[in-house]
Image (tube, rainbow, N blue to C red; front, side, top):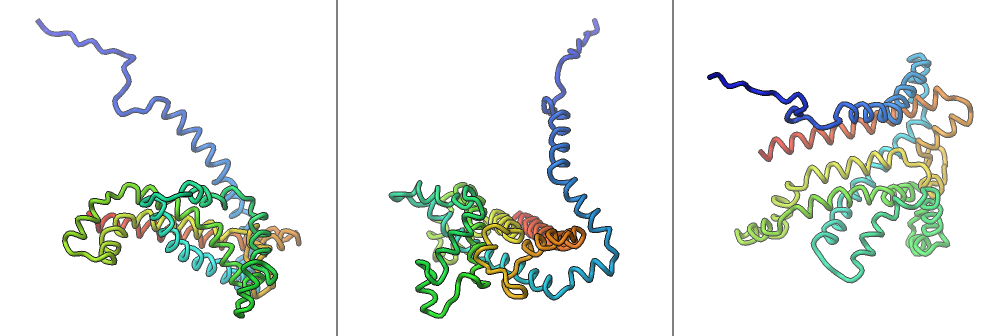
Length: 282
């Protein structure tokens, strides 16, 4: 006798997430409203300029100087945060000490503080009459109202991105791996270079990219401590604001598109490095 197979029409297909279509639609719609449409509007507004006008705007000496400060300062700040953020994350993950939770909470302080408050606090601290600015000035180092002040502000706002990205990766790294490397005769430097760094390299690159992308567009915490001197300490976001105040919207969007391109190129380079690192580790 042939068996009759009864199919349950209400049985869900395997591998399908309940409500996937609805959640995907909401996600795409939300991202379109918050991210894609504003970026598209930026490009459309810039397209009102001819190529000659666009090139004349972004190749202006004042604009090029601001690009050099914003992008160069962001690279320096992200590199500094990469080194010291790794140290901070390592200490918070591997060691227990009195006040550890307070230090861990202080890492998120730049997230919680309004950027304008951060800028005023840093300016007061690093000015010639400030607690740190006075000793530095005695040594001939001018912190506030200089390029150094810009880098200090960018380091301040970028550190949490590196630390919070590295912490989970370091927490997942078993200490037995380091012990095995030590038992095989590896020194501390060799263990860090050949065992720890390769294991957390994707997180390191991600933290660096996030810190750079955050710093390159920073305005509030930098505008006070920089001094805003054209050709010297003027950052690109301030120049964009200046263009908008002059009702030169197309010029402002042209500069913004170039700045956005720097961030995209950095993210693309980091993603390529992550893919290369993953393929190499296999």
